[in-house]
Length: 116
Image 1 (cartoon, helix red, strand yellow):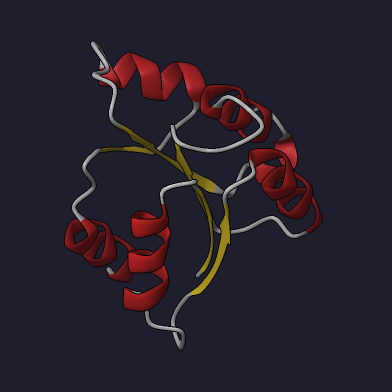
Image 2: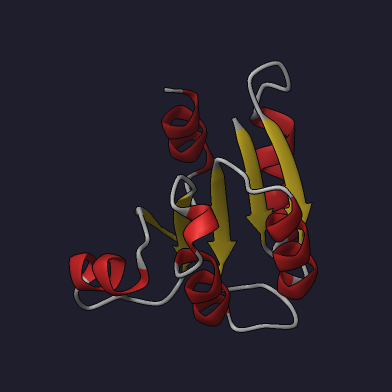
């Protein structure tokens, strides 16, 4: 699985990079959302994880730019947030997000999900 993770949280990116099996997953890490968007456009990944902590662009704007582009119809989008989302199902539908992860992120839970 080809995964792009957009976060300026060094702990999160380091843990994902260390714990995901390189034989099963290729993970690209970005702190700058605009740089990530450029790379995502060149090589659409299987999954994009966007943290509320990303540089250069609002995470929701980045999610919307990805989710509304038809070339990413087969790309799963996950949002990692420390903010409380009042109606998660409505948020997921509105922004075309497949999964919401609450922070502090449970890395083991994320790894298990991605490995299944």
